[in-house]
Length: 159
Image (tube, rainbow, N blue to C red):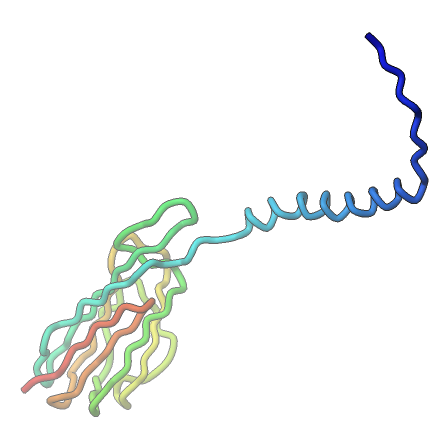
């Protein structure tokens, strides 16, 4: 059965008005996938710092740092992403004659002999911990504090 309906006239204004509303929606729909694809996951979930417990004056405490970062798809445990900064602050008059034993880190700035802060940078994305040793630390009661990505570790100098 066929039904004949009366023809409706559609004004040119109605067509233009409809087209004006459809263009921004198409543009937004096309732009959204690009924006979504460019989002990146956070560079790290956490970092852990292990410091030599209660180093004696004149000794060489070690700091070992590991963490977790994401490559955008997977989290990699025990690792730090290249470019991550590690800051050492020296509290209660603590100093160190020098630093040595850099593993996975490069020096950025600071002087441990004047009480820091001393900043290092992770040289390449690593799947193991990075390390630094501070040499000939002093005085008793001084503390060296490592900070990276929200994780901290402290070595308090003893007699």
